[in-house]
Length: 273
Image 1 (cartoon, rainbow, N blue to C red):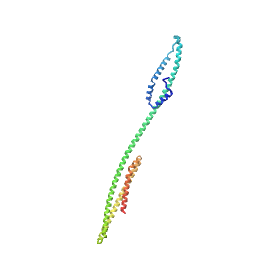
Image 2: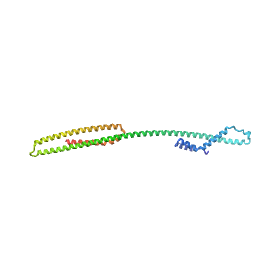
Image 3: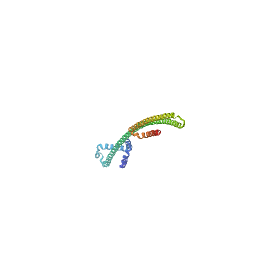
Image 4: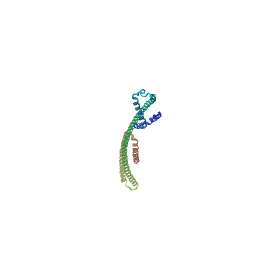
């Protein structure tokens, strides 16, 4: 039969059906096998109408054509059986195609739902990451401002320390001048000794005052640095996902502050010696 499909063609058709939707498959089947379905329906309808009628009385009406009619009927019967078998096969194939299309449609719907859920999850993760990034930038800006203010304060303290050192140098020069004058003959020893004692007392007072101020300021800076370290540690514990960004943004300013404080301490110790 020219209109029937072979098993290989049927398997190829079913494999190609997996890549199409339900309506595409229906349209393709109707478009390809329309005439075959129409002819099959017409033949079956005519066969049902023909065989549903009462058989004519061939013996009474036409006794001469009876053998010919019987021969034609015997030839039609195998074709009828073949058509019934083909119809059953087509029904089975159509049922298989329907099952395959239903399974394909269900899988497509499940896959679509899964993709939608994945897209929703990705959008939520992206929104959370954007929020954490905004918070991290705000924290970095605050820490930079704090580091800049500490840097300015440190520069101011260095300037004050430089002025104090200049005053000390001037006092030391005066003391050296007085000592040289005392060594010269005919000098007023008592007057110079009183001035020297007064100058030494002033130097000691100024030195003690500078040491107290420096110690007090150093304690304030150490307390401030400890507080900032505690704040940074708490922020790092709350925002563990932004740990690397915070470390990259805050280690260098604090290291610079600690290094400058260490230099100031070394200078003060040298001056005390």
